[in-house]
Image (cartoon, rainbow, N blue to C red; front, side, top):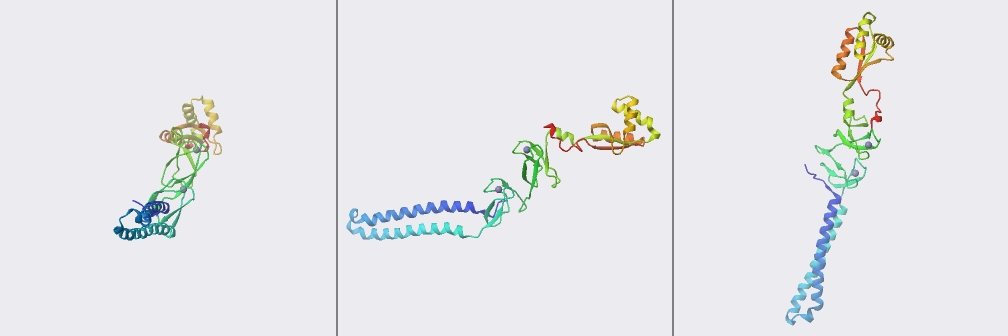
Length: 262
Ligand SMILES: [Zn+2]
Ligand SMILES: [Zn+2]
């Protein structure tokens, strides 16, 4: 889809170029006419002087008219009503004849302002998790490269989530890893539960019982971590069969500022 609206800057530039072009012609015609009038008597045969002078006078008028039209057109552009359009990226104002409905580049910051179905794609502010730089990005993109630290960022689909995490392999993997935490257990299955912990955590039975005893709602004990969801859920089921309460949560939960990796 092309813009029906045109940028004032573009029109002015074109009109200006056109005006200069036609003015040069106008001035040229006037100069030649002037020469004919001034020197005609000397260089032309006497019987033609009168005719040439007449043509030269018409030439003068024509040249002046061309220059006048060019100047009028240039001024006419200045006088036409324009529509201001605020750039969502730099807040600078672009002026249009008509209202823009398709992508265009901002005159001030050179970034492309995107349109969808004739209306501007809104912009949101994100913060690079790594270098804390704020960026304004169109709502409809999921990825963005921080131009300060060059990290590829993955944007949250939740637009209230301003912090954009670096989308490196490590972070991607972290999002798919889960920790399994023991919150409580059933005393009737204490032995079986302790043995399960012994197996999973490769500790002896005495330590497994200590782990069991210290688990509580306020201090759940991690019994497995960095597992894929399927495995974590399987572990949860095994413990629940023994009457225990287990919670599964993403591995990076609770440590949102995992910047120590970078
Ligand atoms: Zn701009
Ligand atoms: Zn950055």
